Length: 371
Image (cartoon, rainbow, N blue to C red):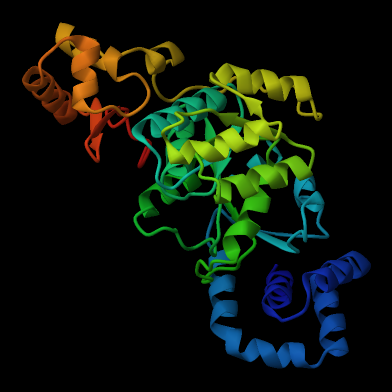
């Protein structure tokens, strides 16, 4: 194991092209011989590793920890789905349940700055999909990604694709979420331990999300968005692409609308996603329902227990952010009454105020972190 792990890390950290590394692994069938062959062919490779000795030692130490895995290109447990992505990574670092790499997956991605309605949508869709038996895959980013991971963990499993080494959580502040994901699901990256997030890593991470998943669902994304990159990579791989439409007044809905114009499935309910994936087939079959660790599906989608005036305001809010004067017109209540009702609902976590517009909130939902 030590010779294999050391050779894999050297092959990953050296300056050899990934194509050359994959070809050597295919030819020799093991990492130590592949490393020796490349090293003899290019003497500069070993010299270049001297500056990366700390990363080499960090990687070896990480691999000694329980639940940490290194999958190499030539091994049978390398996930077949990733052999077809652009520039397949020669090595994958996995933390947690590596068997999830072969489990039916669906990607849920979107903007880092969603509306409250977008967060609610991602949470609800991911929870339903996980409960239906899919592993929900996303990128651990703020916003839609985090909501998808959290919703999935309430009913099943989730997988995070990283733009860093497997020992780092990015962005900062997601350490608790990352630990929960690794306990209940898994994290995957092509970067060895100790490698920080770089701008170029994110599009590469997106190809892992698209490659692993049977389909990609986009919930709120701007026209220039990493989520759209993931969706288009999925389409290039022949995977299903789905998008949730949003308000014409919401800039982070425009990317979803663009995808729909380009032929993505328009979906409004999570059941539509499972139907689309089942119809697509792809050898996945119908996923078996997962055992829920949270509330039942009917409870998850039920409206909150509110008093009469609060329920009237809740209905008037709809699913897009609205200002107080709009709520006055929809309810017939005075601005003073609306303000008082909204204040109580905001304190209770039912609504959020974003730049003077009020949205339904999911802050009252049980958190997945630390479960």
